[in-house]
Image 1: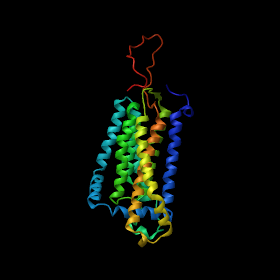
Image 2: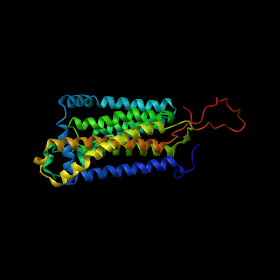
Image 3: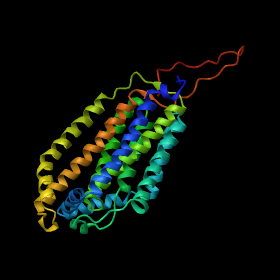
Image 4: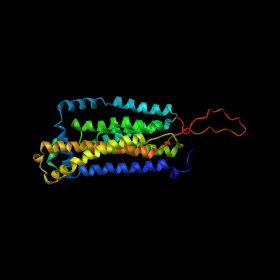
Length: 316
């Protein structure tokens, strides 16, 4: 049943707030990692660490990333929109597909035309151009989040685990291949979440919101939570000593292979932790809500009532 005002739509308010917070966090990531000397040294140490990984692994990751083309991205967006159409929720499917496309366009504009990378560290010679945020990461994460939103509530958790795993793998691969820095991946993740959450909030305002009582998200949250704990633990293991070393040594020549590899490890673990956190947050924000429910038929006074087969709460 639709709520009479947008301020009374719980999911809309929650999703809007989350979209704003995520956009702010993308800006914070840019300021910390791109506009400060220590942040740049962390970024570049992790990038240098990727160069010490097995050449075969780096080549395989780069090969997989090249498969993410404009054509494949467009195909995924069409699939997302079709899922919405098949569920009789066309506005939701088209909306989140558009949100994913907007997220990728925004990341490209920010990287190429708006954001700059000042020269604050000699280690920036590794990649002396602005690469914030990552378009490949934004593509993968935006599509995964959009799929979570458009999937029927009872299957939403499975979509989050499967599509989310692919998303954080892409975010890790762009770093292993040496295409992007840590900040590029996490900045793109926050931008993608903000775009998808904002469109989902608009749909919740515009269209009826139902509840599916049979939807259970705790198994997916448990799986994602275990992955998150592993990533955070791995990050904490290396972070303290790497940050201490980089805060003392600002010269690129002081970066030993061991320090670079440790920085690479914390880069990947932090990326996974952030992407998984966004997936868990989206599941929690949506809960058992079923967005863009078909409106009930309006029957003219005096007209015979149509025969409608009964369905479970929320459909699907």
